[in-house]
Image (cartoon, rainbow, N blue to C red):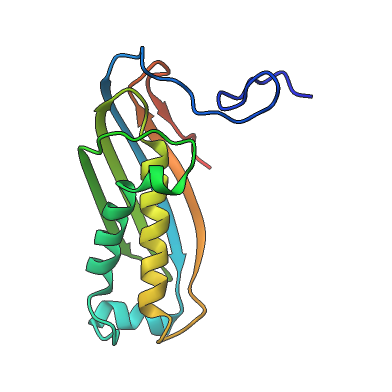
Length: 160
């Protein structure tokens, strides 16, 4: 048994939602990235705007923003918080699409799960849009890269 105390587990091991009622709201931000590896055919179609389903990057961006606002519906122990800002950026690289989402709030708990959900749903929407061109696209990475605010303050992922 580990000495690490998990915040969503009671002493008897049962899961519960942490009570944040007494916490003061504060400004919080989190950023996450994801990567969708694509074939040369898909990358060309994305660059030329010739994917049959339409504007892939716009649809994926909007899906990522919408996902950030739906986290409590997806993760049973997540708190309902105000998502006060969400930016989703997609960059076409040589062999993949790089996705970055930054989510902001002024609330009692952080937005790491909102940022991570944003990039992963954005990636899923991208794959859904290009699967008719080539089914081999895959999500190869998704991770939190930074967060700020709250009791634990600033954190940035060390270089991998």
